[in-house]
Image (cartoon, rainbow, N blue to C red; front, side, top):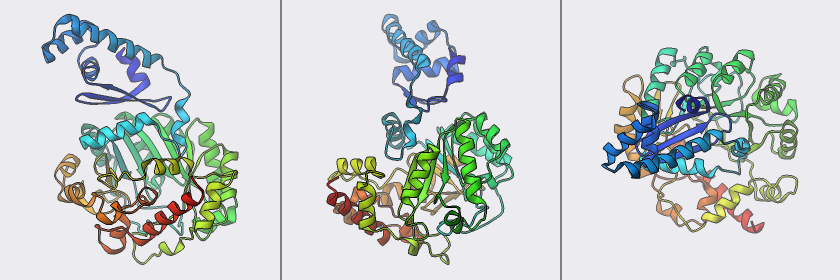
Length: 443
């Protein structure tokens, strides 16, 4: 039984909870309470039924028959999930759809303050120079095989199951093949964010040997000239499209990340048609965030407008953001305590091995060069301040009807001014406009 489980699932045990991730179907399965204890004993100690029953009797001081009955139900559920075959493996590819079990897992990790997801910036180097990119620095590669493996070991001990490779462009790192191999070795689920221009046979083969949840690929147009006017690299469009087709043919789940701003503001329909042709979903971003480097102006690239957004969400050819709008409507009037769960259920380690609140909120909370990740996660004054103070929704936001359309976050204000107690004007303007558009469309 243990061998069958390890062949089909990756998993993490959290005292009275076990989270399993189906390697093929890309869905989560949970065991809670005594079933979680039974699973942990089976995987860590002994898989014999009588051994598990007697260990549970000792743990809970419960009679044999009661535990035996529970074990029979546990064994039945375990057998059921091992035989489970679903068609749900595409469920998380749509930006407007969410897996409810996954959301439940995230909520549990937030409550327990477990860094279930680790966002790792592999490098700050990129082979493209996208005009809207908030990343604008280049430095030496501080990640190496030794410290990367050490980080994965510590993350696994903290309970991390999901690792996101971010950048700039993670495939630029000379040790990327070994990093991917280590992710597989330590039983993590991998999400890759990439421009895909560096995808080659070696990368594909390495990815096939680990569990890949999703590959996000940046895409801006169906026109090579427009796409490359953004990336500033001739030939990048052809490479990206070719890589998407290759990844799809190898069975990977690919999703386009589409930022819309002044250069490609008229490309929404074209990109939508292209993604349909490629058979991949697209996630659209109409708000460009401030760059880390204060000398680079990305905010002025924003061109979002009420009329255009109204057109996009009501068009029969597009109907963008349907799921997001429904969730916003459903939550109207319900203001959460916090803006988001970053640094509650996710940890971010940068290209220079600093721990920050998140990729966008780059307040330094500690350095992996100086401290272990568990010490930073549990003892950092900056993370504690975020959890206890600045993550809490401020009075102005709590009174705003557009709260759930705004996705308010102090990260951009911090980038622009160093102030992490307020929300930037661009975010506020977009949120209020988005709500007005939804009201106008009666959505």
